[in-house]
Image (cartoon, rainbow, N blue to C red; front, side, top):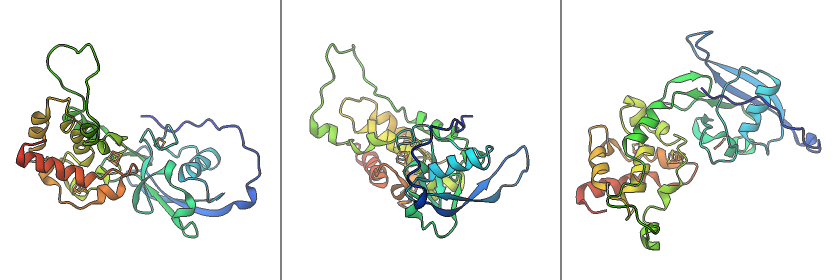
Length: 254
Ligand code: SF4
Ligand code: F3S
Ligand code: FES
């Protein structure tokens, strides 16, 4: 399990102290070594509301309770490791400003739903990544290795541009009520990553991926709820991509 590291960066010049306000962060804690039940814990800290939720989590971990456990890596919206449920909505902690969350009221933070919580804000991502692996998220070609790059027109590249932006944060899949209900559904993130290759003119395994998603736990389980699109921090039109995969399954044109 990777957890947030505890090294504290050098303190910045203290010129923002007067902008700090007192904010309550209500965090759902779970430690299976202490209790089988999760419980909420309030942390009241002084922080500049222009800071991000990730900064608040760091402050709490470094200054209040070193046992608080969460994932993060890049801290800049690239690695996808800090998706969590903030005020009831999936977001990246590193991309969410405290001032945008009505900090006059307690801000709730809990693990994303539909995946087993291992500790505090950390869930078991293995079922999520298994679904990703199942759709073969890599270019499949036949014949000899080309001696030059595989050419593609701008129009062909545009066809799957949106779904190349995925950072595998799981905000979409863990906001999907179908996934919550039985966890067997491939989930929107896997379909987005299948879309990225199905509609790539250089790829030769589109039919194979479509058949994988034609499964009882595949693309037809989607009920067009749009939670996934609302949750995606990369602004990917997830539900549209799923609809395009459904359409390709019907027409076999992609
Ligand atoms: Fe995250 Fe969006 Fe990719 Fe889903 S589609 S895993 S929400 S980046
Ligand atoms: Fe779920 Fe998104 Fe479909 S939330 S039901 S995968 S539109
Ligand atoms: Fe990498 Fe937030 S820490 S996306």
